[in-house]
Length: 197
Image (cartoon, rainbow, N blue to C red):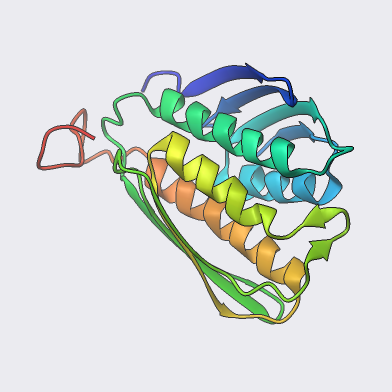
């Protein structure tokens, strides 16, 4: 198996982001975006996705967190795509259903080469800490588009916004881990009848 890792930097007039990703990690992370709750959510992707993730991001948080959150989604999506290369040997599909107290959230994804997001979370609170909860949609939209991933996120239950979002990020990490695993039966084959992803 080749080294499935990526190191990507993105600099705009709004944000500066450096991200390192190892798909075959152990869940280690070092994350600093200046947005505390968002950092907390990214650690769940790393820990439950069994990937090593380093994110250093700065930007115009004096405006709000929108640009940082969206741009980290862009860069993480690009890193996933780069690390997986042509996707030979991967399982391709991933699914997880994660509880967090009263909340239950499901994620299903397909590393299909086609980007699509279905985001069906009902978030009662507009903010958790300094994090505008509508930014979760922006993050996953940017990630799915840049990873060329079909991504479905839906809520079964939940009344606490923190719990709902935490369940979603944990479920995403677990589904990503499942989809990116190497299937030993597949050898060097692509999981597609088209011969490409």
